[in-house]
Length: 341
Image (cartoon, rainbow, N blue to C red):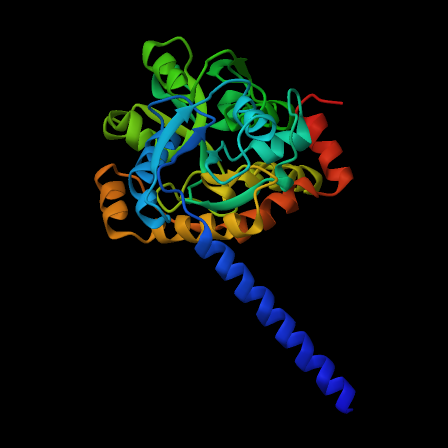
């Protein structure tokens, strides 16, 4: 009994020593004189870019050494170029982090073209939160429901197969019989918005937050129709728009659509590459969380009409691992729904 008590006590002492050593290692980290970089998988002008620049303005004050921080846009490949760069090139010292389209982990499982990374191995440091993705169309197209879209073709703009802009309408085409004609090749989400404004395409998917920040007049003037939304519960601003999962015709389709809807829980997620030390990961998670509660940051976000609903890095890590570890049979069926084999 005495030996067991000693063993428990010894384990507690060892755990305490490890915790103290980790805290000392964090205290020894400084970014003084350095410039940190946030890579975005999207182009300039969109909501991902906007929020990244707000973080770059405020997060350095919560890091040791008060470093500089810049944003580098790295769009392309349906949001795959940026995470590939983080995996293969970016330094592994905590000075480079990345915000990616939240469909990237899902795309790794369902399509995988061009993917040279494993999302589950990245060190996720947190998310600014997000709202449901919306599938919407210009009212001038004369289509007002998913049912009408099964009878009439609509041109939809996309950035590549790895983006939610393309994943959701493709699933709708293959499972629900909608007639989106998907036009890929746009370099950024902002370019798709501009293409809609010019009439090159009439539809896309994206968050309502991105509409508020990019083309708020579309909402003010009632110029768009919301056909479906992607998430686990309906967005409070659009309670009458059906969820993708609610449009499923049977249980199998519902399972597929639940998997496809998983990115909404990630919001706008940020990560460090694999290989960064645990002490630096913990430090960056703490600094990110503190920034999300910073009054000046929140005031800037409010002025930019961006809603912040932070999710801790540990929770984002679990969600990504759940997506990349989804049951093989559901993944296979979802791949079929995307036209993959």
